[in-house]
Amino acid sequence: MNYSNVDNNNNNQVWTRYENKMFENALAELDVSSPSLFEKIMAKMPWKSLEQIKSHYEKLIADIAMIEMGEFCFPNGADVDKKRKGAPWTDEEH
Image 1 (cartoon, rainbow, N blue to C red):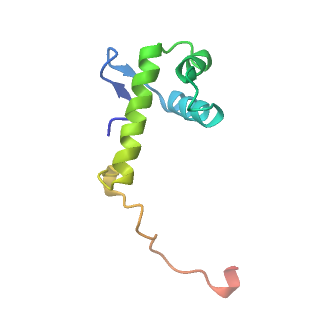
Image 2: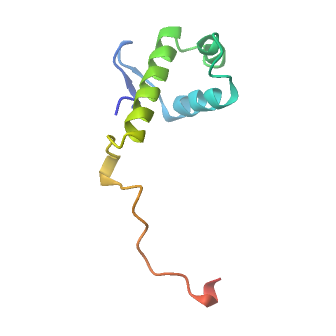
């Protein structure tokens, strides 16, 4: 998975879960078709360089494409299509 914690193009810069969430929230809040998208994200995350943000975005887009094509393996063998197994709810529990 490319959208992991390691950014190979920028001195192995690590993206924490918090930073990933900030990045994703910024994408959700901003107009992704804006020509200044990366600069606006950088304003929210000034400790990241423009190159790091662009690279992270490109990796996210590539990962999304892989997931949509079914070419992505989830960690630990998780299968998102399988229903959870367990005892069904009883009428009394509802």
